[in-house]
Image (cartoon, rainbow over all chains, first blue to last red; front, side):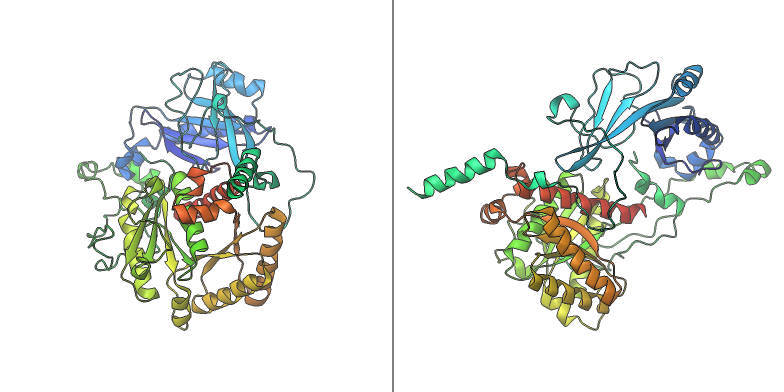
Length: 203
Length: 303
């Protein structure tokens, strides 16, 4: 759906507004910006259709559609363009993938020029359910993507690994796992428990 | 409020039919499970979308705007069959722990087993256990009975499965053998096999039989009892290579599981590894495989 290219994800925000989400790679922010503006126009013309198609979505016909852009980074032109628009029309979100104990996760951060960069939402593995934590609440927090989220960065003991380009083409193997060999090694507490068990059995 | 495309997909593709069709009546053990019983009339399809030309030529009639909202019918939960022998407490423990791990991820998960398991040591208490995972027993005597019971359960539990779910079904292996020649109604199966050559051979023969009974079957493989990823990968690649070459079937990988001390403690104590020892390698592996299962289950709804 949308005028020429398909919206990546379409959702309903907390205020009952239609939200179009587009995800892009590094350097694609300018093109996404154009598409997002087109999406908002396209959605605005079709709110009535959606109300008729899916009344249970609880859309608010008076809530203007908006768009979310997810990119690893946004250039100054994109951020400048967002500043020229109404505050909530386009929301910029920077994302970064990470791995923690075999679990893949995504770190999301507000990229809007009007929002303080100290506000950080941490999203863990999209398959784990949790709640959003951020350093400060704001009007966009409630309307943040309906992604599944995990504990705040401050409460997780992990190191964020910056995604690096693969040095070689991916393996043709179809074997799937999110684990590393490190995950399969027993920790010190496990070994201690084993030794304690040996000691108690020898009495 | 819908959370993802699965919750609104049926508005755009109303012709999609769920994998499972509700049976005429419940075959489930009345004392051990819940069911919605008879299904109501089919949900009313939403009106077709208006094209711009239609909108311009004919404004929507007033009665259209006053039409009652269509009844939402959530898609039934995917059914995952796992062959587990009558005394195979290890595979049963791994299955139960996998069910709990998928539930931890937000899935509405239930384990279905034949009623003959009720007095066996395979499963813990049937009452809702950790994460609300229930063991449900059904008076099934063959694969057909088991599938009908699983279908009922998948439809019954779909209402409260806002984030999807899975019905894990324990299949006695001899029912698969006795069903030979008849179509196997359970189309998504998970085989738990070790990396040993003999077990891989058994998995191959089982795959061959399943494929003969249902050419459209989807078979996943989890390698258990390994201590290194390379061990599991090599075993899976050996098996999948032979299956693809000789049978023309592509196996799906569902990672690896570790059979360490905690698995056996879990069997004895009837406590899930992921909750009691979350940092153990076995718990991490279970979490990873649970994630793979849940993601695939969701993809069956999203398309």
